[in-house]
Image (cartoon, rainbow, N blue to C red; front, side, top):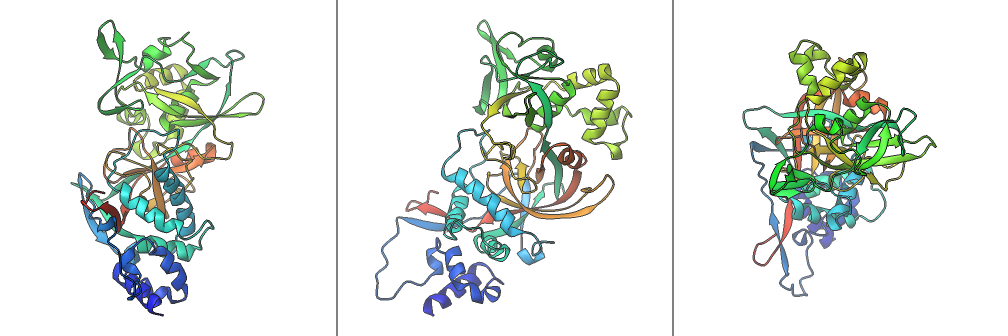
Length: 431
């Protein structure tokens, strides 16, 4: 009883409002707080040794935004969400935080990494089985605080959608398959602060000088041809263009096999949104702009479509992935993404694995609709166009149906970050 009272006191202290809901879940709540020594009373007869590690409360800071604390009960749709589904996706990120996967993209901000690892330790104490939606919700409420992210000069978040295209391809050219998908070239040199093979400014050597890497037009005109960089050939150059925007693809080969491709760097050229060009030129009304409209324009006039694509000098390179046909696309965290639960964020401002609660009204069923989308998602990916403290891209899955939904998402909403309550620090105060 003394331990139960101590746990209940801990719940009241760290998660107001939770204690009243979990009187029958005392053992489960112990698991939630097992990694927080102050939440469970130690027997008075035993001396408590000085811990090598201590806990430090986290006060979040996100550049370019102010953060306002918000009660979980004030998040619209929080209670109704399926927290067990969010918990399953969170566990995927926990595995990557514990042991970095082989296929990782550009690194994210390390700001919350130690705090997330501490929360992951609490999640592990719940055991390997999937928790109930109620227990999963109690876990998030007990181990995180909710902070609304409000960009400087703005009022909230902005959401787009993305998906994994499914296209036809072949391992050898011919029979209409003549559009090459290139792997990352060996002469691609990335420079700049924190440059990695997948981020920074891209150059190539000409003699003793570094010059900007080939742009889209030069590559389409054959700058990389004959170098053995071709992974697969497609029939449709429009398919390649949308693959490059999405950063991944499922390629269906003539024998029925599925080749999974993932992002493996880019040519360092600036990204130009061709949809914006179509709107500016009066070719597509702003309110009707979507990926479907862009594709329709390119297919209706192939020459004009080719010219439009070449106005975006960015060119994406791919690599073959050892993913099963049923696994989601590979995110920058090096994990398989979950449709409707994985989120792409600005990696320079946010940490992969961070839970984000999305409150937006989106055209999910058809263009022009506005249906409630209230969902706890996990930051597991990034993108060159995802820039800003409350900017995010919702992953909707694979195939044409997912693409249709993703292509019409360009909507404002509330962006609430769940910040771990504590991080472990050593005796010197270092996380």
